[in-house]
Length: 290
Image 1 (cartoon, rainbow, N blue to C red):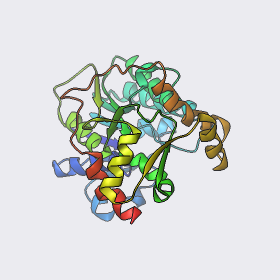
Image 2: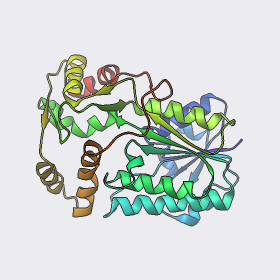
Image 3: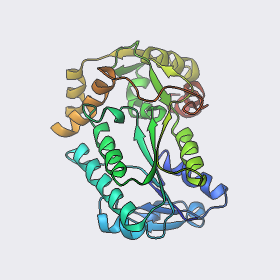
Image 4: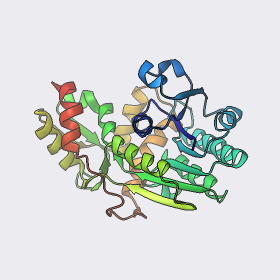
């Protein structure tokens, strides 16, 4: 069985690559610059230079692949939703052209909404394009990544965590490495077919107020959750040089998840993973906030 992994340097893709190697698999890893792989990993994979925005390159890189882990890679595209839609079309074309037997796609909570969730709409488009093929796919509907907190290090160092979510709004938070565990299990198990949805919810739902308390206790750095308006968030993003469509793609994500949204996938044994925010914050955030 030949398994291919995209974004092998990412938070999830690196974990998938590591676990496949440990399982005795020599995966093909697709990335734009294979030189960025560590020597230890490079010696145990088949590195394939591939830009996922290049349809022909994706088809060539996935020839002979039986199972594929696919992430729509983030970028600096002027229109992120359109970019994800294009990348999703490249994936669908490769599945059809190469007859890829099983695909595990890293999607997001909120993709079931299809429209009105900003950047997540691009992931929803990818889901739809694969579904139209009638191919075997597992859509991983992932919760809010713990690692998103790394984008707020300056805030955390100053003792606050800003969000446009209501501070008492509960939602699933998850360690990206746990997503990698689920993805790898799906890739290695050949006994499923058809369209599957596998939510990945982390150990429990958390509000931002609870998250701030956990971060404070785990790092020793007092942190308060602070709610800001959508306009304030837009202004922050504009000050960083982002374009109008980039800003809306980001701002609309929390709007879509807090307004008129009910998750399709309920929390269950299948969706609940083990790593707590406290454990992750102690290991990852604490040294950065010391």
